[in-house]
Image 1 (cartoon, one colour):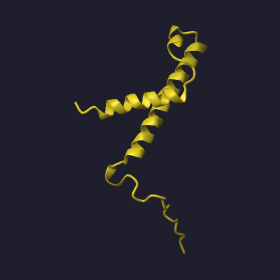
Image 2 (cartoon, one colour):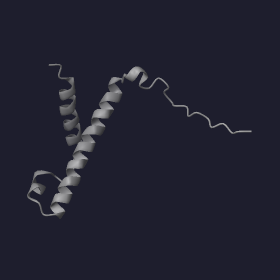
Image 3 (cartoon, rainbow, N blue to C red):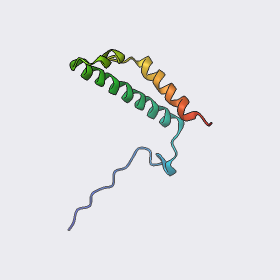
Image 4 (cartoon, rainbow, N blue to C red):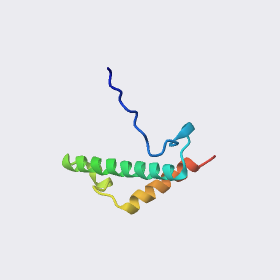
Length: 83
């Protein structure tokens, strides 16, 4: 007799139905993307500082919550631009 592996049940089975996301999901995605961008910039600045590169001064090695929100707002303005 073969064993059956149960299919995982998601808390919200209607999640991303038809490729559409609700505004809260989109806002979360923008915040996550903004955090990733700032985190990458901080990581690059630390590497540049370790290698004593001139570009190390252009990036901070840390970021604040306000910077994440500001970056997310700029991303939102960009993606919301309908021109």
